[in-house]
Length: 461
Ligand code: GLN
Image 1 (cartoon, rainbow, N blue to C red):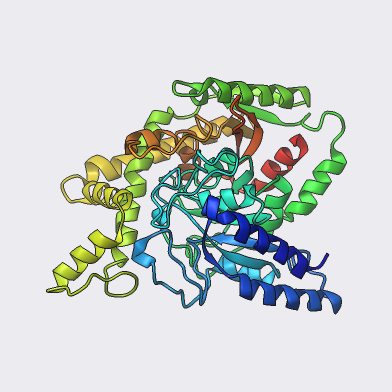
Image 2: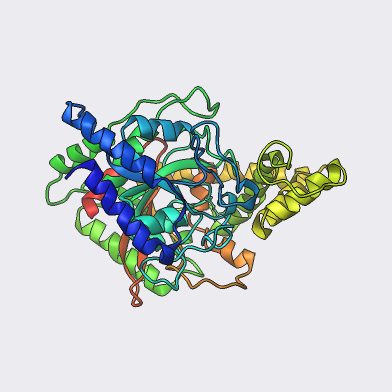
């Protein structure tokens, strides 16, 4: 079939069903159809780019030239970006076609898509459940069959946890692997873009054009560029009936502690057993107590956010309050009216942690603990190749208006350490609860070892 047929198929499905899911904030169907026609012509003339004419969609955190970019916020309800994020240009260059911009928690702060100004997103597996977050629109759109793959961003789990809740695979690469240029910043030292899809291989297809050094991002790192698909195929060719004979999987008891749902635990342990049957060796490792990691993350991420979000002042772009009486009133009302409650909470916590009297007690202390978390991972990786854990303590839950923020933060307990250490990690589906909801297993890799994670998940599937 042609790219136009494929694109039309997805557009029809979105038009018919997204009113139930709410995964898209902006549709770019007309441009997409024109691009699909052009892609078919290019293909006919011998253009053999692998991804030419393949549809996808972007989380609305990535700047897209000439297309509304809201970051899930009223603050940016009218922001049409004048430039593309580097990953958006890279994916364009690969020939892929974007069908639009996907719903997300406001400024990527959240774990269930409830903080979006554009409304909650329903989980296609069960419309009463959340899709996870903050890349909940991305996950729901793939799970509903609206796009084969989508981009996401992950500051503390926002790719892996929604992938887990929606029965998908999602990968957060090594920090510095993918350019952050044009990705609206939440916590710059933790943010990393990645890919989500129905399988590890689909993730690899989309991740490939995203990676590489970008002079426009000072934290982007020059490193060898692997060929993820080739690596997966090589791994497949080399695999006998014990494909994981050389794989040492680290398992930490800290990742199976209080708060872990018993069905999630069972599914994850069963998956580990299957890994073992397929040749893997399970070794016990120690990682930092997740409670400590959680406090460290929820100190540092809001601190960085409070600084990053100071640019939304009602003057330069985005929402501006009506009839401000002076400059202070303009700042105050634009920010109070433009930001939702979760974002305001983070800004307040972050500003507090960075304020003169408390900086050393909170921010500096958290940075020191961050070093220890990194060291614990280094020590653990001396004895294993990957570390496995549940992705989230529960499967997708029902949206609760009164869910208190601290309880929601607890749901990030297994994913955030990875961001603090800058490591790559993916979530892969490993079963269903008795209610038929997907369960995810997290695989954490050494720096730059995305290929190993993708190949491992692929061979397991
Ligand atoms: N749920 C976490 C938070 O709210 C992670 C979000 C993310 O990875 N963007 O900070």
